[in-house]
Structures are given as C-alpha cells and as structure tokens.
Amino acid sequence: SPKELVDLVQVCLAEASPCGRRTAVVGDGGGHCALAADAVAAEGLELPLLSDELSGRLAAMLPATAATRNPVDLAGGGEQDVFSFERVVRALLDSGEVDGLLLTGYFGGYSLYSDTFSEDEKAVGGRMARAVTECGRPLIVHTMYASSSAAQELRAGDVPVYREIEAAVRALAKVARRAGEAPGRVPSLPEPVAGPARAGYWEARELLTDADVPIVDARPVGTPAEALAAARDLGFPLVLKAVGLVHKSDAGGVITGIASEAELEIAFADLRTKVPGGAYSVERMA
Image (cartoon, rainbow, N blue to C red):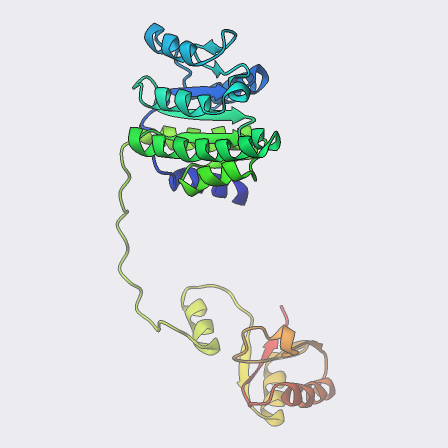
C-alpha cells in the first residue's frame, strides 16, 4: 500500500541499515516491550539472548527492576534519568551482539513533565542519532509521541520514527531480510522500438492498430460535409470529438450518442463553437 511504501522508504533513507536479523528491543514499560517482541518474532526477525557481560553492563545503568536480556525494559529508568535511553541504545548498538535496535514506548512524552525534561529529551534524541552514526547499526523508533520535539530531533539525525509498532517492525523486517540476499542486477533491456517518440492522435491510433489492439473505426473531419460523409461510411450511433485536447470531456470536446445526420450537424456546429480549430474525429460508438 502507499503507506507501507512510505514506511519502508524511511528505513531505506536512514543513516544505517541492518546487516542481519538479530534485533534488540528496548522500551520503558513491560507492555510495550512484550508487544514489540511479539511483532518482531511474527516478522521473522531474531531476538537473541544478550550475553552475561552485556546484560550486566545494562543492569548497572538501570533500576534493579529492569529486564536486561532482550527485550530490555528500562522499568521507569527513563523517567528517573532520561539520559539512560542514550546509554542503553549506545551500549547495544556498539555491542556487536545485535544487527538493529527497536526502541518502543514513551520516548518523547517525558517532555510533558517540565521544560527541563523537554530540553533533556531533545538532547537525548540527538545523542541517540549520533550513536547510530558512530556505531554503524540502525535504530528504529516507535513512540506514542511521534510529533514531539525529541522525535523531530531523531528524524533530523536520519533515525526513522513511527506512530505504530507494526509499521516500524514491518519496515525493519523488509530491510533486514534484504540484507541476507544476493544483490540484484539490472535486467537486460530490449532494443528500442522504432517509431515516433511523440505521436499525435491519428499516429497513436495507427500504433495501436499495428500492435493488433482493437479500436473503434474513426475518420478525421474538418467540415460539416466531411462529418456527414464519415457518418454515411461508419453508420450511427456516432461520437464526435475534438482532436488534440488532453482533457477533451472537461472542455466539452466529446459529444456521444449522435443518432442521425440532423443531430450530427447540430453537434458539429456546437463543437466548433466550443473548440475551434478544425481538427475533429467522427467515430463509431463501441
């Protein structure tokens, strides 16, 4: 869908792309972590168990109630110290144990508490974007506060930010799967087709006929007498149209259902008033 295309383009334009499916999930709440982990698994990404050494370093940065094996639940650590987001993100991106990182939950919402929180959270957004650049591994962010100044700071640093966790994970999974595939190649192109680069109305009809595409019979006309002659040749009912207009109907340049010579004469006079120029077509109705 167009939305999925836009979601995917965000990841493709990001500072770094995943080189595999190993994904770490970080959130400031068990509910967000669980939903994100389920979405990651459903898309075929991996949730590797973090090593004792890395888990221990993360535990030293967070409250005692935090989970540090993957998913990593800050358990209120962001509320106590918003800079813990940056420390955890950097440690994971620099660990070599994961190929990409998904941050989910409340980031951007702490700014509602006070102006100090707002400035600090914006600074953390910039620091996390720099961590992506320095570590060379991607950070994908889902947040309930996707319009916050902190989220805008992330986007300014080429970190994709999503309002829906499913959209974030789906886009990340598509790029991660592509990382394990052999590079594609440009297919061989056929020889250019001989013919006019730009065809007029009658030239276009001739191209269709040459390609065995069935089209209704038509005759070029420029006067009432020529229109009547064409009608006798084609038979009624007929269509009369002005040739050369891009949007003929909008300009009143197409008259359908002409059932007699008298109606054709009236239609021709009306069309020549609306669209002067002398280039018209009489066509059999399909």
